[in-house]
Length: 359
Ligand code: PEP
Ligand code: MN
Image (cartoon, rainbow, N blue to C red):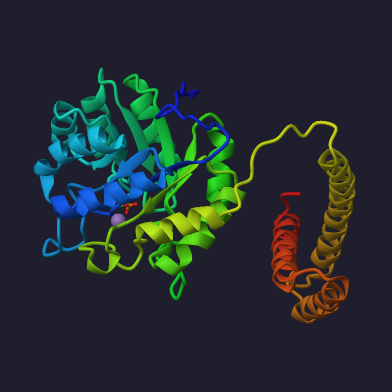
């Protein structure tokens, strides 16, 4: 489904990524105003984020201050010229926020997994002049995320953006709190070219020392903005304490970031490199096709002679030979190993088909 999209907020510098910052949670009037004041002084951000109703794992954790924050955010908007944005998870949240003049929302990663909840939120937003950012679901399920955009599009919401915040996976011992699975960001951008994507490096990181490298990686993947958890005094934060940046750290990080811009590239040096790559890819694919033809002949031979497909000694030999060649040629060892595994896996699949008579 093609989706009509409008910017979530008017931007003055179209080439710069949109920066959203603010605390994980609103914890007190002082904390909220102090964070907003410091952030407004940096002149870097347009949108000020904070959670009011917090989706916590344990009901014994700090669950946000709730409704009272809405009027504070309105004051902040007037005083510091920052547009507030908050997480919505129920139709009542939308109703209360809108009544208080808060019009920029995001749907959190835990709500995003539930089509009933998202449908109710979309229904609650119907007919309202609001902007909605949709975080990816905690599980790496892109169609579920796509469906969420469709739900809001169907009720007429045009000001939408995606927030990429990483995924829960079975992978243990990972460095970051959530797995970035960057390939999924690329797939999302391919699927919905029209939807701006912001990255939330804070939740991917889980620890402040990783926020910069994740933000940088996301910018290299051409995201349209960043949402960064920023707190006046991170050490005292009541939620996500380890990942929030102080305002000076946020400012320093932003100035350190390399911000690539989309320049006119036709007729450029890049164009020539792309032609070279196309020629090489063309050769690669022709060679792969020949390789699969030979796998087919090998399979026919194995079938006739009733030999098993897997020949572990031969496979070991191939790996050793190619991995040492990769080393000589300066090809990354991990890439070479992954590539060989993929080739072998598909060669076996091809041979299986011949063996059972499907080819
Ligand atoms: C948040 O932004 O504070 C939050 C709870 O994020 P997520 O839904 O991505 O976990
Ligand atoms: Mn948080």
